[in-house]
Each structure stands twice: as C-alpha cells, then as structure tokens.
Length: 160
Image 1: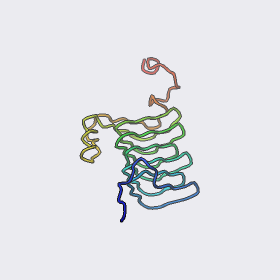
Image 2: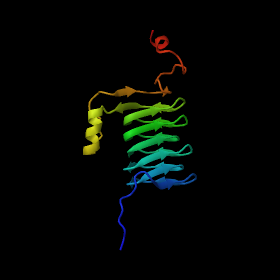
Image 3: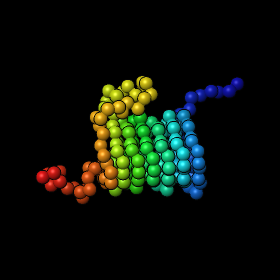
Image 4: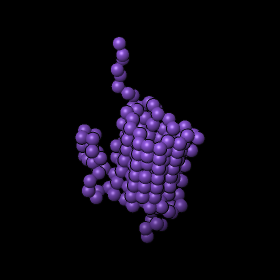
C-alpha cells in the first residue's frame, strides 16, 4: 500500500530559507540547505550546505559540508568539507578531505583522518580522528596555503 523507499541522501530535503530562523536540533537522512539563520546542532546522513546568506550557530555532522555563508561551531564531515571563497568557519573542523578556497575565512583547528582511519569510520560510523596525525592550527588563515602570505608567494619566500 505504501511505498517505503530509503531517503536519497543526495537530494536536498530540508531548506531553511532566507529570512527564516530556526532554533533546535535537526536530524535528517537526506540533505539540508541553510539560507537563513539556524541555531542548534545539525546531524545529517546526507550533505549540509550553508548558503552565502546563511548563518549557522551549530555543531554540524554530515557526509559532505559546504560552507558558503557563516558557521559558528565545530564541523565533522565524514568525507569532504569545502569552505568557498565567501565562506566563514569559526570553529574546529574534522574531515577526510578539506578544501579551502582563496578568500575563505577559517579560524580554528583542523583534523584530517588518515586513510585507514577514514575507511574504518565509514564502516563503523566513528569519526576516525583520534591521535595527533593530521592536526593543524588554522587560526586566522586565509586561502589554500593556510598562511597569510599573498596568493602566489613562493614557499621559499615564506620559509627562508
């Protein structure tokens, strides 16, 4: 009688639109997009996108996270965390893959799982980020290099 399908984690199922505000914890099996203001934790099996006009005062856990707006809180991406050129992340980040575009703002610590730990977390559901390998302090860094040097500055000019 009822067709019980598994949710498509690649589809955006929940939208907090521009001009909207939501307070509370969100748990979703599909993807979430925030274009308004969200205060509260996000736990998502799919992807979470914080749009250019979106602000999240949240800890976020998801498969992939895209920050094009502003996030105040810690984020854990089971696969890829992307901070676009308009994105601002004020909090710690843990991800298998970290992409920071030039012009992005990231103030916090980053931790990347080593391949074996990341593979384990896929099968066990844990973050796989124990230990000190892959830890970086990115307080106030801008751009891909993680330094405050202008884009195109050779590493030899920065490090002697």
